Image (cartoon, rainbow over all chains, first blue to last red; front, side):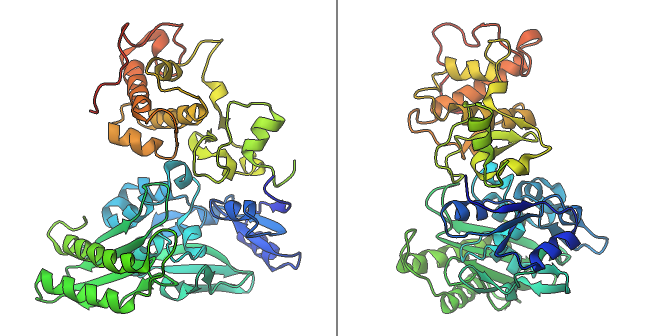
Length: 284
Length: 167
């Protein structure tokens, strides 16, 4: 037995919103459960009510609208994103990040929205969604609001979401023409460890703008200021990117790596990824 | 049913289907892998109530009338079973893989099985087993096809371990 809680399985957002707005004690939203159920088992979280959102049809969306905006519903597991050919083509960095998470079994349960809402500094979906300029749509009985992923994280494992809000879906803006993207992560053991450090990048040849975001090197994932590539050499852009990352990172030492190691390894990842997205052909 | 009961506990302690094993209990080891609506998941991180209305397949569904499945026989013949604790989870991950990809490359096998830890075999025999099962299922028509039982026939020629090098 994982714990003592009531299990609710609403079929509409309204029903879910009412459960969350009620005053029946601490309530947790259950999507994939790959973080939540582990935390309940480890007594780090002790909700009275679990609201399973997986049977809410509105949260199962995974589609691209005519304008090119991608919607990822809160109940969509990572493997669905990975297996969608259109997403592999348009956002390779998003797929690389999703594929880097845990194991095949867990990716059949774990969701992109859940990975963000868990708000780990090491959340693998965060850097690429930051670099892509994604927004999270939060829904509650009070209404709906759109939160840029860059404003979502307020601390280690803390988001700006209110207790009655449901992170309903992610919206990834339509890509600029020819947009390239990529994700690189340093980890000790494939499939069985969190990131030591990670970096995501997007580069739009049409505008010459390079966007970088990094994970596991500060209390929250960080989006850096965009870099105008212009006519700079690849080496000069790499140098600029590394300096920007070094100025922003505030790594700690933990069980996975020392702060010094993170300071040493992240620039290597940044150089590799920047070189790859600037190179003809795009993603690494 | 208590809300806190996991699918793993439900299978083992209510249905007495003890083929599915509990290793770590936190989704790391894969010993409790089952197919939920055809997809491999770790049953320790699924609540039994979440599986309401879903199909659940466990290792108990592999053999038919006491005859091992092709996949099970491949594990036996390649020596992919030592202590056996990881085997049911390995079999279910491999079953999920072969169903979505009947002819996987070694890299695809490794990726599909990366969530299943084994402390005995060193994994090479397990890789050989999945490779053999894929080949045997493709090669054979009739009783060897797909998930049918093997009627006790060997998949490998006598004296072969099926291991060899990686493709």
